[in-house]
Length: 92
Image (cartoon, rainbow, N blue to C red; front, side):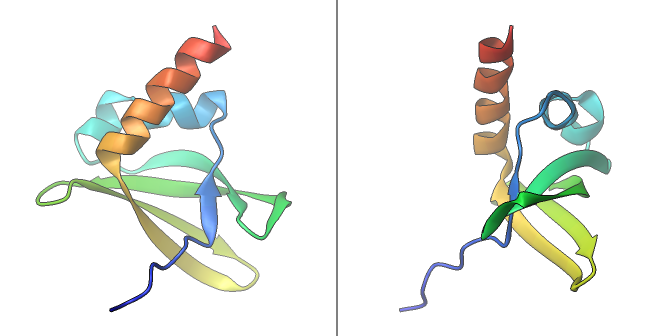
């Protein structure tokens, strides 16, 4: 049985990230800008691009390039939208 691969970069639910994930552009599959931090060191923050990958699984690919090179993780777009919606309500 294959182990679960933890993401290297985690979405930071800043106002920019929330607005991007909930935007019509993201919904349509266009690339949007999101904020991320390194899972092993939350002080290392980066700007990444995110793009909805429509189809089975409805994923959201987060791509970031750092000094260590390019990296991409895929997240459930449905869960991200729900989390962003809740975060937006809490920020108001």
